[in-house]
Image (tube, rainbow, N blue to C red; front, side, top):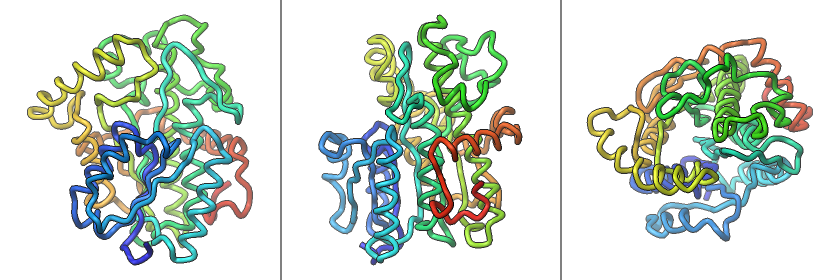
Length: 345
């Protein structure tokens, strides 16, 4: 596999957006033929959507489906160790694009991982911090790009949050502290508010992810060996994906799976980067951002579809960003030797 130009590593590859990203890669012959795909899923045995997409892959597309549970820090470490070994051995080419796409959202319930962290926070933030730091040694040091999926929900001031309700009404912050988010102490179901409680935790986890984008971009820029590895973020808009599958029947089956896709097909024609977007549109935006867009040296580039967008005010709080970074290091038990990033502490 090392004969290809690079590796594309995608998390959440069996989900709606993830499988659409794979489909977009396969449609671009230059990418499909010249890049090795590492598509991570929770369980390869049940990754039916991904396998369906890959069934039409050109013969030249080298790829592996990799089991990785983002709700398990040990699983992430195990997979990263194996990928690093295989890149070092020349079995995989260096990682050209690390696409951290996987996401988790609860609604009226709350779940904790075996590691002791709230699942939304661990999957959407901590897993990304750990995986990115572990895999830096395998990144293409000249053209490597790390894409982290964002969301308008990260910005408490973004009016798009009020599209069909007001989940943030009466709240002035999505960052009560890393410990409160990590341990599931904030916006709990028993605090009242129905599905708003899960949406707020999702928004808070995405705020943490956007803070990670900024912090990682800044630290990479100061690193002599890694300064050319860029960090980008993407707001994919509202899509008819399976992210909301833990919601009510009305939300999941009627609104998200039936009504939203139809609305998106109509809306995207007049407003490509509007509220509602087809999966194929956001998938194309993700691949484009990894391979076609020029990124300012040493800075985070965050796009809403194809338009540059300023991230929310809370994501720019340096004190909170540093506190979150430090908490993540401790939570993931990152120690000397785990990452080649010089300024990792």
